Length: 278
Image (cartoon, rainbow, N blue to C red; front, side, top):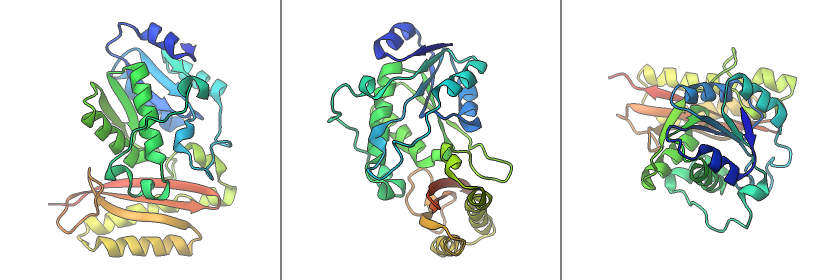
């Protein structure tokens, strides 16, 4: 495995390769990331993993400065998976001048996470497009844990006619159901014990829908109320259409339930795909 920090050097190493499989990350890798890397290796070689904490996707009161940075430990984990290249640029390498050209997402990136984190998907789409230009992968792997991000990236690739296949990796969960996330490390012991409630709430919504309930707005409100009573600060609980993420309507069959809420100082997100029986 080779660690590369310069764009020119990575381009030189990848010159002539047409079957590159790419996993973009912000580091602090856990089993969810490693599952994406294994999935990438099933699609192509060389496997490239980027580690870059992207300032463009953090708001002024978010955790950019404190976001966990564990590059050496991350590289050890990736070496064990036989990754070919780790691309770990610094901010000056990725943004040598102020990034005044940006990718502005459509409505898909302005609702849900886009509403509660203004500018987030602009930052994500811009850095992902830059990384795609640098790596030029044939495949790029994103996790369903960040469901809306996956859809935004997939639509960007489609609209810009990029010759990249976006591969979706399933969410990896702890035994109690909590979706693995780098931000889980912010949770106190008591908060960690409470955190699985978010996924349990989504499962309750799914079970109600699969049993025939079509009043999606009532399900959303009931879920918000239950989380509120348990001490969460809820941004949203939403039952949406797949893949547009427009609000679900009676008769829709391909759905996804998404939620974002704070537990103490930690903001958690999760989702669950739902297929209504015919």
